Image 1: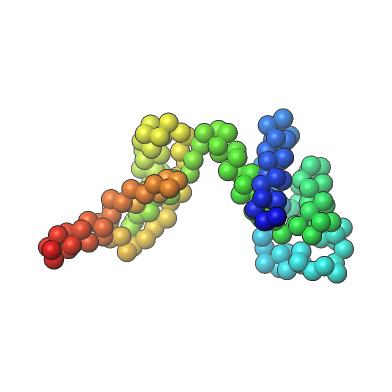
Image 2: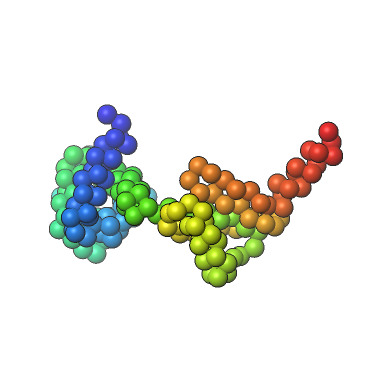
Length: 173
C-alpha cells in the first residue's frame, strides 16, 4: 500500500472528526510542521528510539497538541509512520478546502503586490470560479511585468515575458 493511500485514510478520519466539531486543524498543522523539521524527521526514522520518546518530542515541540492529535501522533509513532504527518496534514487541508469550496491561487508578479490589489484579484477570481479564493503571492523578476495566475490546473499568463516571446515567434515566422 502506498504512503499516499495510508495518509489519505488518516486524513479522511481526521476530517470527519473536524466535521464533528473536534478542533483538529491547528494542532495537526503544528504536529506536521514539527515532524517536517529535518532533525525531528531524522529522529522519527530511527527504529531503535522508542515510540513514546518520538511522540513526546513532537508533543513538546508542538507545545501541547491536544488529546486527539496526541493520540494520532502516538499511534503513528508506534506503527513507524510518524514521518507521514506532513503528508496527512496536506491531504487534510485539501479536504477542508474542498468542503468549504475554497481554493488557493498563486499570483506571480515582477514587483510586490499591495494588499488592495491582491484583494481585487481574489474577488475577481472568486466571481469567476464560484469558489472562495485566497491568494499566495510570489515575485519573479524574470517575467518583466504583468502577472501569472495559477489556479488549480489552470494557468493564466499575462506576463510581459510571454507576450514578448509571442511577438518574437510571430516576427521569426
